[in-house]
Amino acid sequence: LVAIQFHTVLCPEAQRKGMVLTMDQKVIILIDTGIDKSAFEDCIVGGIHFFAEDHCIRCDEDFDDDNGHGTACAYIIKSIFPSAKFYVIKALDKHSETIYPVLEAALMHCLDVEYNVINLSMTILDGKTTKELESLCKQLQFSGKIVLSSVCNGCKESYPASYRSIIGVRG
Image (tube, rainbow, N blue to C red; front, side):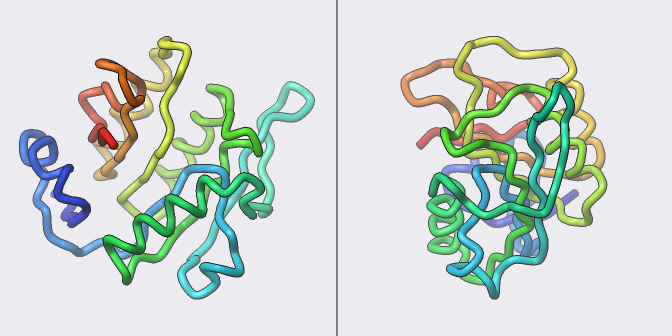
């Protein structure tokens, strides 16, 4: 089992899913709009940027935050867990939007990195999901990754937080 200590709101769902809550993992994979590199320069262990261009999914090393949401999430995580470090995956644009193939590429990339805790402070707003996304989330779980995803405020069900392989966080 992968061990993690995070905000206490996660405890009931994490325990129900059989996860042990202690701190072995110090690096959080932050999938969001990026991060302010100057504000977190001592806390970044790496990063990548996935985006769609010319009907293809591309990547580069520009994971600077051009929206502020990813940076705000990093500040919240640091307030709870001051020794956290971040591997940043920029998958949301300056409007905090993305498309399924970009999100799926970001999550697939997580299978290849050594870190096990993935933070997704996002939800799919159209109420739809794909079998590929759900399958990928299961694959992450089976590979030992813990994925935390926000639940859409005011919604009973949102994705990917509603998948059985994900820990949904209501804020």
